[in-house]
Image (tube, rainbow, N blue to C red; front, side, top):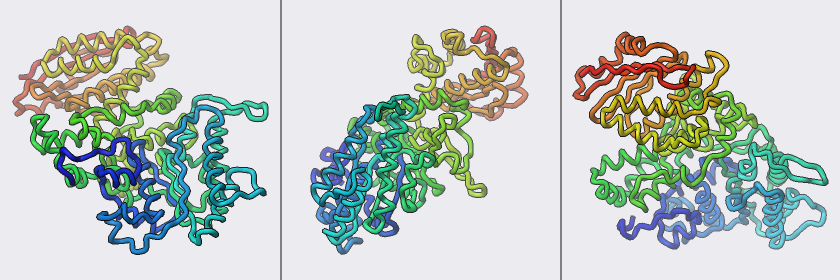
Length: 538
């Protein structure tokens, strides 16, 4: 790799040709690409946005065009002997906004018309799907080689309009744009079954697998490699790749932070690592955030800031499930792999969009533990959900958390109490009003789940099992340990007694830090702190 001063980071560069010709840093995945292209012929790959899917598609395109010179020095150069040129058909849905009626139809028509001008047009067919099938047949005949079809972000036309209620007028009748775009794609993708004899290789990339909406019904047994242990690192950056390709920028960042190399690696891991895409549990970093961090020598929330998951907030607002009821649980793959077009089940969309990931695999039951991948996602996603949940526009959740962190780090228990009290009091009554006891318990439980999740980005936060509206937690700072017991409509003395009875403080008996035991009761009537008692152990 080049000297750090010369290293160029391909931020926003999705062209393999440009990366190779202009000397950008490139993590060599071509051994996996060779394997992929020789083991099967129709694939689907789901990965979160900005995870390298477009670069993968561009790399495959150049490989199938036989551009041997671009691959010199890469793993595939010693594997591939023939470097044949195939007819390649590439559709990229990334660049269009499909909330405007007719956009999808225009994008497909433009692509098919361009291919027809090269390979010929049939006067027999008028719909885009069958016209494309004809083009594939003619390309096969004219070149003597079967065709390669690469479709990037195949699901964007549906995600853009998901649950928006946008409509389109067709033949004088109004239809949901979500349904129209789905049907247009279904008709277009139906070509692949009929054109099977003319296809050498097909890859569709996207965020979600819309199984139930029949988009995939046109395929002849596509292989979904989204959770394949063989291809889990096809996109993203592994720990080994991070340390071997980016040794210089890691050292440069460590120097600028005044940290050791190991401390900087730990910082990067906490903030950007944590994705797992198979039962093998190989750590995969978000490449977009890593490259931005190296370019700017700063650990910030690059991936989250690049796009707000508004469609997820819409889905969660319809669902009866809260984030705390979705995270930290084991699931059968069928529960989160296929997106069912049901707003009551937001889990698959949250997982496939990258806001949850696999954190453990239980082989005996073939179940996967899902949770938030890293601090970047936790900070952004949980803050966004909290702001929406509390509906308190006057209360800046982010700045309130910073004030709370200051109080924790300074050992100011009275200040912590005042911050909790004012935050809860600022939530409108209409938001916290609940009809029955179970809903009131659930509301307070979720309130503190969100707060503690945001705190845990910066401080060690140990959450005890939650039940009956109670959230027990331990917050650790370099100088202080806070052991909390929260009670709804109980007393602070009862809460402190429970800390003693459960022995929460025992693990800290030999700890040099100051330990505060804090019992808090909350009033469902007033919606804020009722009693607060703090016991200083040492």
